Image (tube, rainbow, N blue to C red; front, top):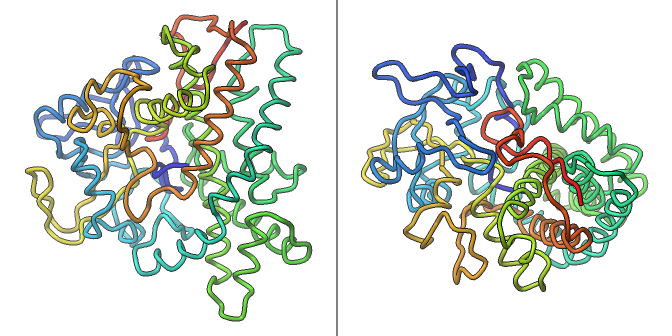
Length: 427
């Protein structure tokens, strides 16, 4: 669960003004005077686009063209990205106004905690923070381990090679988020289909994405009604109780968008992070050893995987509410700004030897979960899933290895969220 990919960043159709690509998967070359187009081309499954390093060295805040055709400024340095993430002069709420710049083709039609500014954001976040506690996440650890072990037991019965993406990295986060929110097991495939359509990383049309939004909202209406009738020991039941309290601290619409936000953002980015991290460990000379060691080494390794291989290069789009000077560049009021999280995480200022996967790194203030008011509520849950998933898998299958060269590992098509789409392995 990261500060990456809101519901309005689902992938655009490949058109001349959106996500058209040149041969080899590269974005079209910018015309003279045109800013470069996002997404930048990644030369390999684990390699960042070289444009980010060039920006950090030369012009860390520069114009880019979004897949929608809108213009934005990309903040590529650590300090600039952190400022965009935390400074109230950069608004999330302003991105939902009619005619506002957007990343993809479909407008945001459903409210979200991620699309609020203080004081509304502060009030709603405080409510959910009281329920989505570290204690609740710690209580989920045995269930995460139980689901992980069951998936690995099933994997152990298969004859390799096996693709770990559908068999493990996609499945585990769905099971976990459904446990957290109390989604019936019989509804998990239905929820996953709606969520996949909403955050499609294919060439879904705006109409298809809006239909998925409507479908998931309708599903949440049914689920909230079921929780009122038969509450359980889950987060959604707790939020329903808060909403139904006499003081009316949470409206029905707020309750619905919190449920949608948790369901959608609680598994998609985590699934991609597990796959990205696993690929990095399998291709590093010491990766499997680090993951199979004790919790201290494993936890530091997970932080490095979060830093180097986040499931998105950019964070949520913001709008400058006034003229702002950002790392030497003047941002005019009304401009769209993207915090370059993936680039910031490889900035040499806070991260010596930034390209090196180093579990001994003494400090790791990466921005994968955001910074400031919108810091990801589910960060501790995502960490728990990564620690349990990677550690358990590589201890259970110490001989795990890829069956194809790294260069042949495919990546899911899409915009700003990314991850490998297949992990063929044997053991």
